[in-house]
Image 1 (cartoon, one colour):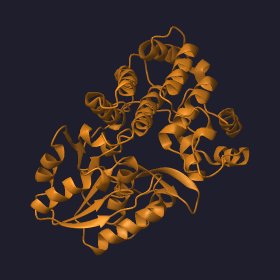
Image 2 (cartoon, one colour):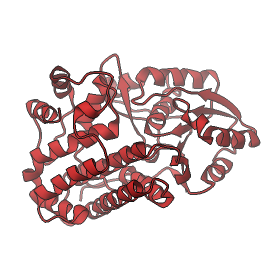
Image 3 (spheres, one colour):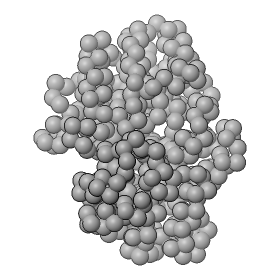
Length: 380
């Protein structure tokens, strides 16, 4: 196991009335709260009103920041940071899924510095050290965004979608009931993102008998079990809660300490998202089987264990095919043309994706850009 330093900075409030408990505890010193959310679904499902009632009872001044889109843009970050500065916001409350939370993580850091975060990290190779305190109220789980300080953002000007180190939430609200109004397919897509996080950590480099491998396999197995429970009954609140915690466990750092991870499928999908508007979880569902068919022989032992412990299969190849069967069983897309992107996904677009994807060197095998293109073409 490699050397590591591990910190878990987020206070987690799980279950019924979690928002009331969290806001009563965490906002005692706050005066002005920026309430950030997406396209308005939180207003339709009553979560916005519930949060606003709590904030009013606590005597907080509330500043609305709405319209955070899926695949949030760097321009939206700058808009939010400007509003936070103008209104002298002392707490940001992100209510939504991974897109809202990721956008707010960077807003929280950008609002506390005059330097441009993108330039800081990718040109100067410096990272922010201060941020507005951030809370995350999760309404759609899967990304695990509430459990770490990383955020994925799309720089439209540069046509790059990538990770930025920003601000970890000070606290997170995980109430499975908040996901009840989310369409089943959206929950399943998020759950596949969770599965992907655990798989991509597991298939990285680790030493023998690594405890994180054992935990990753347990998270994968539990995610698959609860995806199938939810398919059988979309009102299964226990399954939704299990998937919520699986998401947290996959991205709170526990699986990653002391090892190198393989997030090659994520890097390919992120760049696909920079050129299109496809759903992240669904894009991963299309890419993963094709990618794994390319690398299965490069990590035969690990894929065999994955096959046995997650899917009850005997061989590495059978495990990959069982993953493909699960994707079909869940009704997730299996081809890029099924992603409902407003941008037509053509071989020309895929060539651009392949030529600009970040290449991971810690996976079972380093891919070439031509092989990434080949994998993507197999997904058409």
